Length: 463
Length: 97
Picture 1 (spheres, helix red, strand yellow):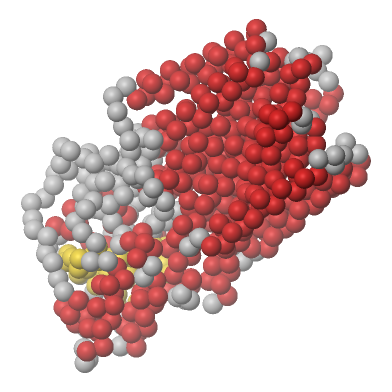
Picture 2 (picture 1 turned 90 degrees about the horizontal axis):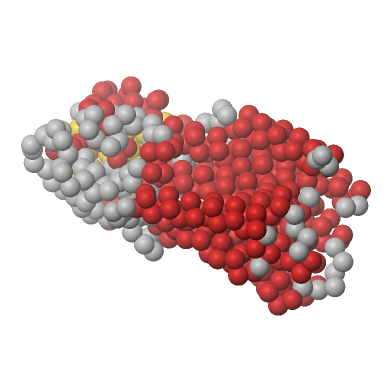
C-alpha cells in the first residue's frame, strides 16, 4: 500500500467517525451523513487510482450497475418503505463481504498458500456475511409484505437451527484442520449452508421486531467487513467495519430496550404469533362502532385533542389528511397535539419523519414521556392506525407478551376514537382490550378515507 | 510470534470497537433509524475490498465473484447514503420550524 493511499484512508476514517458524531444531533445529522459520504468517495478514488487496471471493464460495469440500482431504488421508493431499503442494502454489504472473502481464498487456491489463520478468518467472514445477506433479504421481504410478517414457526425449529449452526462450526473447523477448504466445492457448500442459516434464523421473527433484527444484521455486516479487512490487510476496512459492528451492537441493545424486551426474546421468542389461547384476563364487552359525523361533532366541541399516529397512517399515506384535520381543528380553537410512541410504525422516528413531510410543526409533536401526563386532561384521543403501542395489556396483564412495554396511556382520556381498517389484531398479533373500553369507539375503514369523511363532516359542523 | 503488523491491526480493532460503543451509547430514540442507516452505508467500504479483489481476480469463477461483489458493494454504498440522506432531510425540515 502506498503512503498516499494510506493517508487518504486515514482521512476517510476520521470523516466516518466525525460524521457519526454529528449524526447524534438532529440539527447536524444531515451534514454528518454527507461527511461520511465524502470520506467514502475519497477512499474509493484512492483505491481505484492505486490498482493496476488491467480489467477496467469489470470495475466500471460492476460499480456503475450497482451504483445505479442503489441510487434509483433509494430515490424512487416511498418514505414509508425506508426500513426495508436499509435492510436490503445491508444485505448487499454482507453478501459483498462474503464474496470478497471467498474470492480472496479462491485466488490463493492454486498456490494452496492460505494459512490456517487466514482460512479461519475467511470462513468466519463468509458465515457472518452470508447470514447477514439472506437474513436481511427475509427482513426486506417481510417488511415489504412479499411474505407474511408473522413469525413462521414449526416444531423442532430451534433444534434445526442449532444443528445447522453446529454443522457450520464443525464443518468449518474440519475444513481448516484438514486443509480441504482449498477445494472450491467445500467452500461453496459452506457458503450455501450459511445462507440457509440466515433464512432459518429470521423466519421465526415477527415483522414488528424487524428494526431490531436489521440493526443486529447491520452489526453483523460490520464485523464481516472487519474480518475482510484482516484478510486483505486493509486498515480502513478493519476500522470502519469494527466501528459499525460495535455501534450496531449497542444500537440493537438500545432499540430492544425501548421495547422493554431482551434481545434474546426478540431473536428466539417468535414474538407476535397469533395467540390461540385468548388473552388472559380479557374483559367481556362490546366493540362500539361510530361514524364520521359523530366524531366530527365530538372533535369540534373538544378543547384538547391528541392524535396518536401509527403504521396504519403510513400505509394509507394519510399524513396530508392528518395535517388538514389539525388545521381545521386549530381554526376551531381546539388544541391539537400529536403523541408519538418511540416505536410507532416500523422504525424509531418513522412517525416524526412522516409528519414532518407534510410540515406539521415540530412543537406539536410530543414523545411518549411528554404526552402521557396530558391524557387525563385530554377530551378526545384520535388513534390513527396505531394498535400495540396503545394496548393497556402492556400495563395490566402480566401474561401478555407485550407486558412491560411502555405505552401511550390513551385510555386515561375522556374519549378514545380509533381509526382502524378492521378488528384484525395489530402487528404483534395480540388482542387489544382498549377497543372494549366503554370510552372507546371505532371508526372502521382505511385511514385516508376515514379522515377525508371526517374532514367533510367537520366542514358541515357549525360551532 | 505474531507479526507486528497484525498486532497493530488488533490495536485498531480494539480501539474502533470501544469508540463505536461509546459514541452510540446515549442517543435519543428518534435518531436510532438514521444512525442505523448511516452506519449501514459506512460498511459499504467493503467496496474498497471488492475493487482490490477485482484487480487481482482471474478465471471465470474468480471474475464472476469479483463482479458480483462489486455490484452488491456499490448498491450498499450508494443506496445506503441516499436513503440516509432522505431520512435526514425530513429531520432537518422538522427542526427549521
